[in-house]
Image (cartoon, rainbow, N blue to C red; front, side):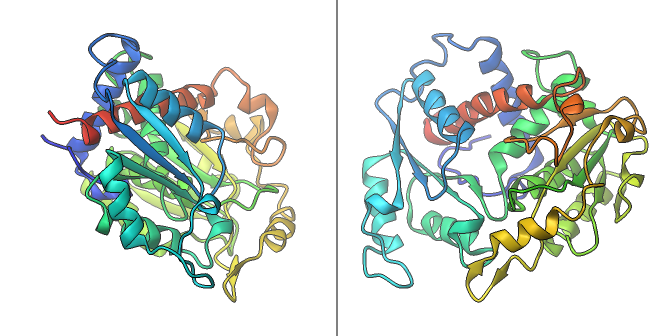
Length: 346
């Protein structure tokens, strides 16, 4: 299998075998992190990191990944570039993408809720860059999907239900396990990217999937349809509920995270404060020990940053069945694998 020059914008775009190849290489890189086998894969190569939105884990993990592969990660911000927008003159995506392709060997873009005028605009921008780039384009999170996070999630869950960190992250151990993706009340007005990617990656690897949220917090109908189809193709089930407790029953993985409502965008603006005010009216939608007791000794997962006291209690987030730090660590190894497979010639 050859993934050289492949874009990664959503895991649904890749075959399951290709996703498994990423997880297999990531596990090897994690086990022998500084082996000479890996440390010169991207020697003299640059990965451009285009950040419309700031991040803690994303920038750190990609910079570390490039360094550990012998390459270089270059930080870019749109405010430091003369780019054309809907209201200002400047360089087009076509021109910027083609020039970037002459300099570097890969481009990552992060663009989330408050930097787009409507849902889907972030993905449109990334796919436009992919259209004009002759180097692989990797989503580092956009308003629809977060493929690197989804793969890190799957790796972490597979480690917990498999032999542990460092061993091959065989996603087959997830087959038949129940994943609960549940809305959590919070004050951050988050995009749908991480939770939608969790639905897709879990269903691709044969998990039963349950989606729980209050009325009025539906996710993208296309993502829900894909999740249903993925589950059906694997002989598994998909359920959706507005009951705050029902989804926890018999769950093996609990993913509690806030996400915005479909009404977050109006008149080309993201109404963040309205979303926060509305979400804080649902304090019962918090992952706590009482709800976790309904599960089948489930692990708690979250892409971070965690809105503690809203999405989940400290008792659960810092408890013995929390895998949040394992998943965060796996961002580094998954991204090393993605960069090696897409940016280095075989």
